[in-house]
Image 1: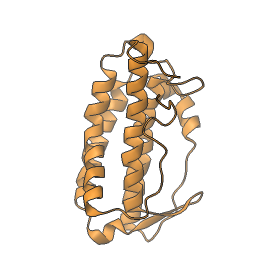
Image 2 (image 1 turned 180 degrees about the vertical axis):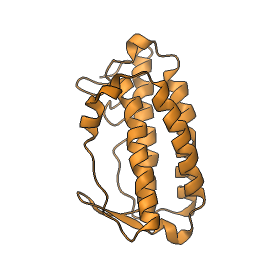
Image 3 (image 1 turned 45 degrees about the vertical axis):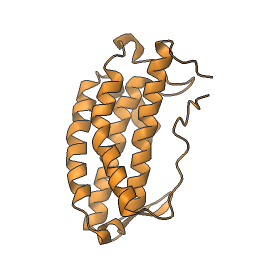
Image 4 (image 1 turned 45 degrees about the horizontal axis):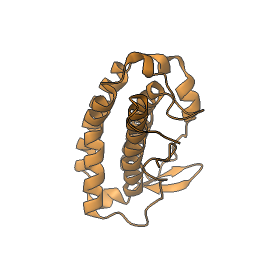
Length: 178
């Protein structure tokens, strides 16, 4: 049985993130643009507006959401690397998903993700051990270390990719989700 809302499980903040785990998280982020393109390529255009679950976002909204969210994270990394524990601005993901560009073709968001992840991975690979201990202040969560935020975005990448892949399989009749 696949949990539609959390197909890779719920995220839990790690207590520690090793160098090996960081490398694996960076690989997940590096691989996501290709994996996402591969996942959405066979989905017919008329199925892009099917929600992954009742009341959930559509495939199209998720594809647009991913670069929105990852761009925010990329900028949070840059702020934390250049300022001392900066306070970041949260945003309303659901409101973003309702804006007019959420009904656009997928290619602009896929292209944005390609370039964004290329730059993000270059930055991540150049970070030092001390850099991973730097943090930003999230008004709703508190201080977030960059090593923990990296783990979050590894999960976020796998989370939405799994939702899209499960929806595509359901639409093809390969699996039945409850």
